[in-house]
Length: 155
Image (cartoon, rainbow, N blue to C red; front, side):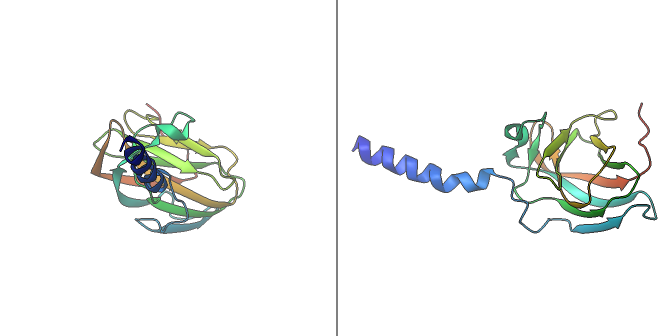
């Protein structure tokens, strides 16, 4: 009986594992932005709903907050000579998780106050998959994702 329970528990955990990974192959929940360097208007913004049921801590690189399985937004970017700034504003404490074109994960919690942002001094051309999380957990938090080549105002 104990062996059967252990086998059932193991089988159940194997089926649960795929739900734990961020899947950048899934369709982004809030759409795709296609931008080339020196884009206008700058910044470009999109309203999103932050959060999810997956803890981003396991990605490493200072990632924190709860995020969804599918990316919130996909950015197809043609880089030039300008830096790239990816940021989020919200009334809640949000986090930012980005999978870069080379597969590297970068994250931020509080670039300005409780709003996250990532500064890429020499961005690569390619696909950026972006998740907006909620610090401490949660879902359904209104937020705005902004993409810019103009340096953020830090306080």
